[in-house]
Image (cartoon, rainbow, N blue to C red; front, top):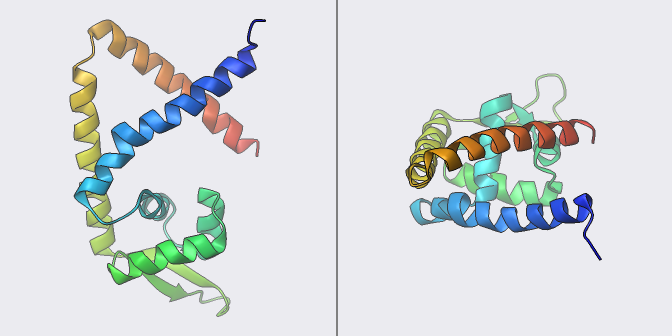
Length: 148
């Protein structure tokens, strides 16, 4: 019995995730106490500016209690701050501090350089293939996420 395209894509995506973790996210853990979840929160704040706890949860598809634990750790590190919403005092917004912004940029640069180093080991042909398919994968995954 042959596998359908959906089965092949599913198998590939489920295999890619651990490889991405091992090669991209795991090195973060060596350089910092911030978890990948914390990095995702910092990245979301960097992209979006001020976000409520609920909005962070939506961005990252995480339940609010999980987001609260991550944000509390980031507050302890002084990477983010809580701020009351001026329009509705019941809403607590989270903002990136300058320390958090600098930290995020440093880690992002470190990860980027580490990944570039690994990609430079590929042949020119494999680099072209990775460039094309990573662009396509990003486009397709972005389209999928926009439809949800």
